[in-house]
Image (spheres, rainbow, N blue to C red):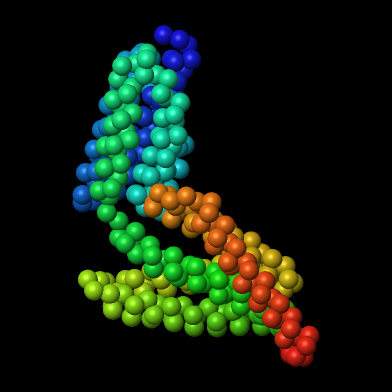
Length: 287
């Protein structure tokens, strides 16, 4: 067997051993049907690792740093996020593994199993937070668009960080309560919806966290324009992070959704900034 093939098998063996350990650690702190799914996925990875080991003649040592990192991601973003992220890495690697089929008879069967069986197992994972991801997206999108626009307008019209921060806080709290109430009434009106209050809570939490992060620069910096610049950078980071989360759990493309959301938020901020300039210059509003 060629040296390049042995090297590839070594890499695959380590990856399988690492994924196996990730699933086992996630299973330890998971209860119910989700735990059984994770244990099954860990067993599949262990079997694949043993298959590659027959050809390498080595015992694979898992990548402990990767295991630690994915456990943190699992705690923060949930099981579905971690499983889909690992799957996407395996699908990318599968393009390189196709060359093994001639030298390793089991390669085709393992690749097909990873594409089919693991996807079926991943679809069996049931997480409450994913049921309300639409509510979280609604709260986050609205907070980003509304508050970045409002803060841009307040910054130029008012020109004082304390005043802008107070106005933004009042706007953010009022909007949070309004959005949560609207989501509750909307979900309650939907047939078959059993938990409208939970949907409103997820909406409110997403909105309020976004409000707090966007207002943070106005409490830390002295220049209102520097605070606005930091606010927009924070908004871009929030959009990037949440869009990536949604893209992974829903298996959707990331780039188009990110650019769309970023463009909308920043366009509204630019328009509001212009309105603030009009209010301060033409109308004569100044504080």
